[in-house]
Length: 120
Image 1 (cartoon, rainbow, N blue to C red):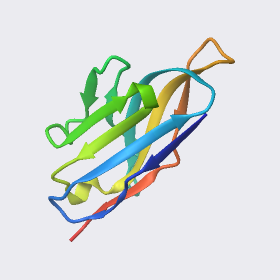
Image 2 (cartoon, one colour; image 1 turned 90 degrees about the vertical axis):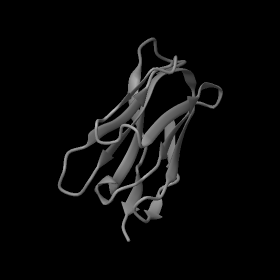
Image 3 (cartoon, rainbow, N blue to C red; image 1 turned 120 degrees about the horizontal axis):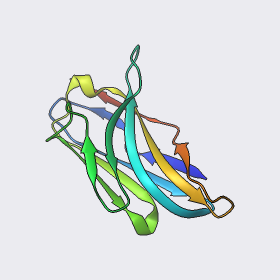
Image 4 (cartoon, one colour; image 1 turned 180 degrees about the horizontal axis):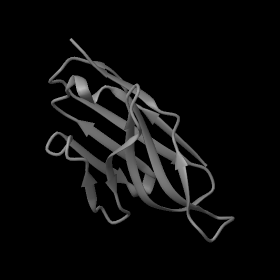
């Protein structure tokens, strides 16, 4: 199983970016998907999560600015980031709980990370 992120980059404060993460491989089912971020010198933190039925959860720092969504048919999760702030600068990682055809339990998988830099 692989999770591949895209969409990061450099943006000015107040701008928008959209991250995507596609899961591929021998996937039987995908449960919760989410986005985490890690800024230099800080611990990795949950940004947003979405269940298989669309229930969402957000960190207080991004509520009202970020929107998580998913396309179950394509095993893809998105993060729309609006009104970006310098403090949003971090490496963003997607994560997913996935059951493969070879196992009956779910395992956690991570993407390789994509850099988001917010600066003027």
